[in-house]
Length: 109
Figure (cartoon, one colour):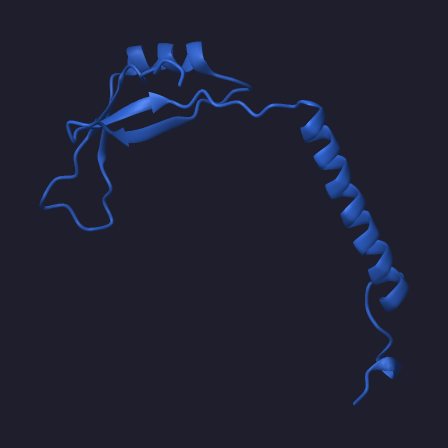
């Protein structure tokens, strides 16, 4: 497991006991620190953050550093998915015509 990267400037607080059920937690943001955290951890303009529960029971925020791999297996998998979709479209077109809809005369009722 990789080292944790905390979301500096973002504090996750426990849900207040008097809060409605739909409130999950409260967040506090220290603007200067959080802006720096966002700038240092952004990828394509995005930063993903997980709100987690520590072993102590306290919530905290951690930068999600997971990145998809684009190795040969992923490329082959995407090619297979595209081929399957293309094949399904061809079958649909052959059965239902180029517009994707069956002729009304072919409906058995």
